[in-house]
Length: 123
Image (cartoon, rainbow, N blue to C red):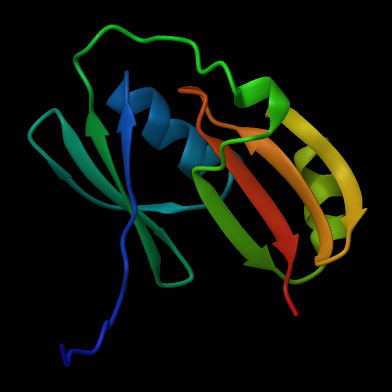
């Protein structure tokens, strides 16, 4: 099948849309691109979008969260150690502290809904 992907936009299900928007905008520096009614929004950073959609189902704990088995987003960033230092100055939950791995330096955080976000040093 021949087609070109121009962009990929992850969609995260969230329990509270306004809380999720506030986290990504205030803690991680995203900008609010749009909202649709009271259940859907788009945020972006450096031209990379994420969509957020309210999930009205009952929230359940993610059992693999504490084991770092399940990543929801992976951000490749410059100066990952500097990003980690900045994150530690906030109230963001750090799931995996900064560590060296065979593929590079990384750390993980969690958003208010328990989505695990990895920050990995860009090659």
